[in-house]
Length: 367
Image 1: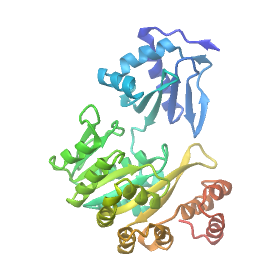
Image 2: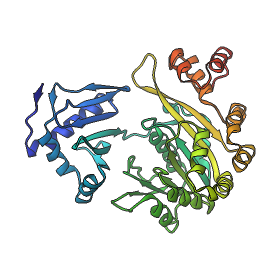
Image 3: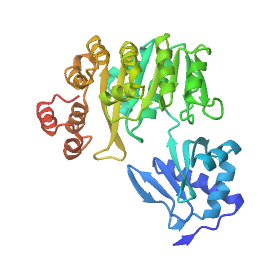
Image 4: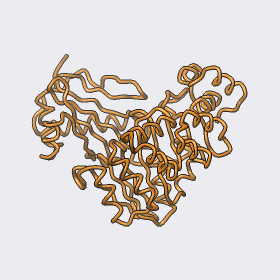
């Protein structure tokens, strides 16, 4: 294994060259660490980009140019820091710098400069209605790398091109930069513009927003602030790290102390409008991945289930809620397999119930 001999003048240029290769190769992520081969994630698989290792000294030189003093302190104190980065070619990346065995490493995720359409992402048509809401809370859930940010960006773009509103985003870091069209856009970034999500959401209520995008509901205070914003007539979009729609409701309520949960459950039942849960699967016959999407629309019946704590029955409501724009993961997977967008084996493997998946596939009832 050979080592690339960088200099202070070339470390940043080499980093930009790797990012350019990620964009050209249509990869999603760059993985970079001292003493290790630079790697990218291409169509879901990690592979080496070069046979030359990145030197430890080059990593230090790169971080000196990437990180502001406050971010350097965060890395030293917390072992990780997030930032947004625009390459020399004008491409936007979300960068996470972290320590591994005491040494710095980073992952840079490419953020497409063009907003994908509903059709390109194969989003259920019922999601378009979420961009027409005037108030309430919409949650997009899934594991890391499941496309939550891309779906939210498409929803925000739909509002931007169609409605004269003030859209305010609070992110860590700002990922997709929206240019004003019909709406005006205010992007606020943690550590650069605001200290934390919770205080930023509270402050946003004095900033005349119509739509508030909260990058992540990562703590109870942020959840409480998001609830209040939705209750006071704002449309709030945010994300949670849960695998399915029912889990998002349980995760939200369970984040609060036991004595508050019944009140929070009632408040959530009044403002929650939809939960969109998604996961990405390898596409068949072409490069890239496709999203399987579960949709929970909060009808009066679902609202009653949330308020009364009968979340175990929500899945049945999704199964029978096709006319209201709902679909389960199994229905989505069967539809993708029927359209030859994923393999039947992948669909059955990821399905909640293999028997139900086979029945939906055979009967043509997947969405």
